[in-house]
Length: 282
Image 1 (cartoon, rainbow, N blue to C red):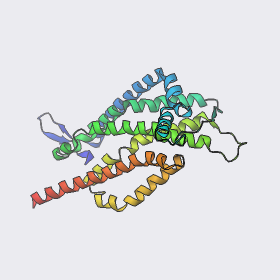
Image 2 (image 1 turned 60 degrees about the vertical axis):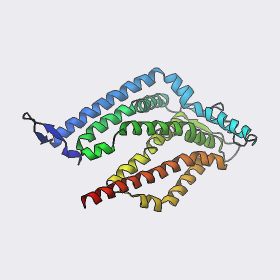
Image 3 (image 1 turned 180 degrees about the vertical axis):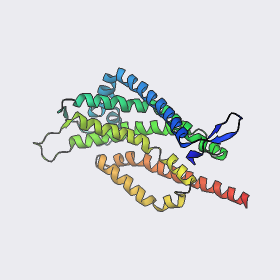
Image 4 (image 1 turned 30 degrees about the horizontal axis):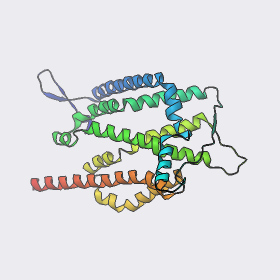
């Protein structure tokens, strides 16, 4: 249990920590995390112009790497311009007094969290780690590396795949030619930032299901049972945010499906190991 942490007494014995002492430890870890996010936010603020103009507004330009890459693939496969993104005819505005400043604060805070993510997770892990058994600790070696790696891969996937498809789709969607898409900067950044950050968190799926399998909440058979529904959900969501062609849906769907299959393999591995341990005890 989380509240079974021990502390050293004056005689060297182990004593159970009180609830208040747990809060003090948690507060210390949270304080260190906030400091790390603040440092990351300052770094993002220093390069704010580049991050906003070149990075976050990148999906609004036709020369965005994802668009040019798809065009090259289309030409290589002799498909003409079928995979090329349409020209983005988009105007944006700020219609509130503090609109741009609010976006600025959101960008540097979320950017600071992304930059400091490995350290923030390290602090979380240091708080949880004393509650784990030696056997559980052996099974979680390298967890900080894998969690951080999956997070950054997910962020890149959200930025280079999901965000540009979403922005391109809604920028070119119109009910009538007389209606112009004039977005507020708040709505734009409130779309791009959650998509990018959410993808980073979504890529934690294999590790989350792995730990849930260890505590018996999910199983490989359960995930296999709902596999078709999971696939259908992934494909439907990909169909909404991508252009109406098969390759685009595949590009969005396949990585998430692979993560789901990896989750099944990890859960199966957990079950096999638990079965061997039960046999040894018998």
